[in-house]
Length: 240
Image 1 (cartoon, rainbow, N blue to C red):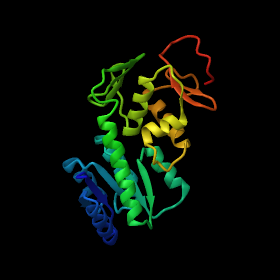
Image 2 (image 1 turned 90 degrees about the vertical axis):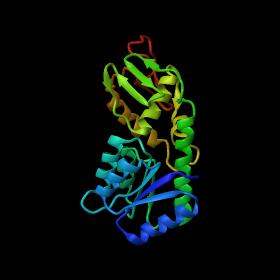
Image 3 (image 1 turned 30 degrees about the vertical axis):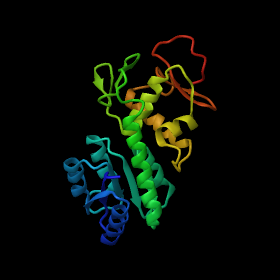
Image 4 (image 1 turned 180 degrees about the vertical axis):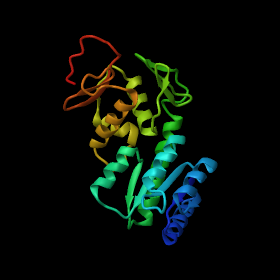
C-alpha cells in the first residue's frame, strides 16, 4: 500500500505513535496539529484518508470534518478520548467512515485504517465507475464524475450518501435490506449495526428533498429495509 494518510491530533505522543504505526504498514503520512493546518493540508495534499481527533484547539474536530467534507469526499476516521454514545452518533450522522476511541492498540488502528482504505479503493474501481448515467424521476447521477443532481440542482452529498444513492438508483424498484446496504456501503468488516443505515438514509432523504412522510423516492419497507421507486409511480403498496 502507498496511500497517504493525514494524521490530525494536537498530542505529539499520539501523533508519533500513529505515524510510526502507519509507516510500518507501508503507508505515507502527513501530520497536522490543529484544525486550520488540517484543512489546509487536506486541500493541498489530497490525502487518501484523514485520521481526525475530535478534541482540537481553536477549531473543533466536528467543524474540521464539515469543512473537509464540503470540499472533498475523502474518507475520515474519527479519533477521540471520548467514549459516550452521543459522540459516536454525531460522528455517524456527519458521515464518518469509522470511529476509534482512545486508548487504542496500534494493531487495531492499523487494521481499521487499512480496512477503510480497501473499501474506498474497491468502491472507486468497482460497480459505479465507468457505468452509464443513472436516472430516476428528477434524480440524475453521473458515476464517472461521482456527482448527482435533482433537476438542475447539484446535490451536495458525503461519500456515504453518494454510494447509498447510487445503490438505490441502480436497483430502483428492488427492496434492499439494511444488512445488504450495510455490506455494500460499509463493508463486511464494519463494526457498526443496521441502525447506521437508518441514520444515513434519513440524511440522504433530506439532501435530495424527499419528504419522509410522503416520499417520492426512498420508501421504507417496514421490518425489511428500503427501496427506491420512480417518482410519481402509482400503486406502490409498501408502508411509508
